[in-house]
Length: 317
Image 1 (tube, rainbow, N blue to C red):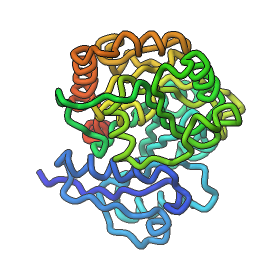
Image 2: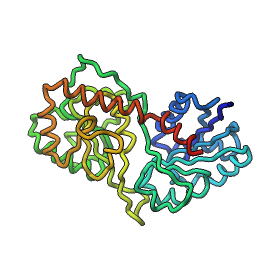
Image 3: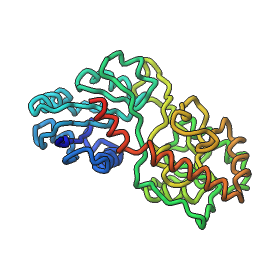
Image 4: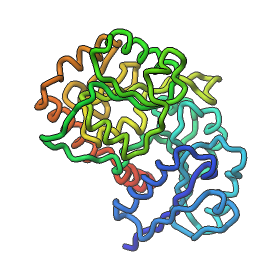
């Protein structure tokens, strides 16, 4: 049986897409899956003016918040070429109000957030979480020096600032905390590096840490009407899992146990005191670090790469 052709594109123009790397990772996953005859990755601004190759499946991923994209043009392009049109948003629930407006355009609509399913009220909507980017992969080796007690990288959303402020306050300089990210506020200005880390740097920092801190977002962009609370881990969880580190995730209701075994593959914390206790527990305990990091990495490699998500899309079509 002949393999289908895939046209991968965005839901927003590339120049406005701050998460372009996710589409690149999906393109790699589609190629690695060996399910397609060819994979084309083309900016949406070209697809909507018919300047793109034909394909059996058109997969548009990203944020539907841009007013510059005529989503109905994507529909017409697909109909003209006899293609199945699939949207996959990776910004739910934070941009639910945008995404809800385009849910009836594609043949199939995937949301990254399970908590939004009951609110879309459309028969073509399914849940498809994001996955791990293999660019983050690092082998787990016995001689890795984990010289950082705690690593964090991310934008300074309020919940992240509050937790980091408390961790630094309690640590009293007794822990080596390496934190990166903008918008951290005056209390963290001298403690957090504003540098934006590239993928390779982030993976190396995580790999060199006893613990990597995992805290979600709490600042919606277009989710004011229903205020849907996230229950699905974001892509960074799967990315960092590939780096060969131990993650501790803020226990804020995310259904992490749908993806990883808590305690054996992923740690949880309720407050800053928990984080420091976990660091103390794992300091000098390289065997436990390797065991948990290895189990988490294996679980990700086995079930949470983009090739696995692509396979799910084809099954649904």
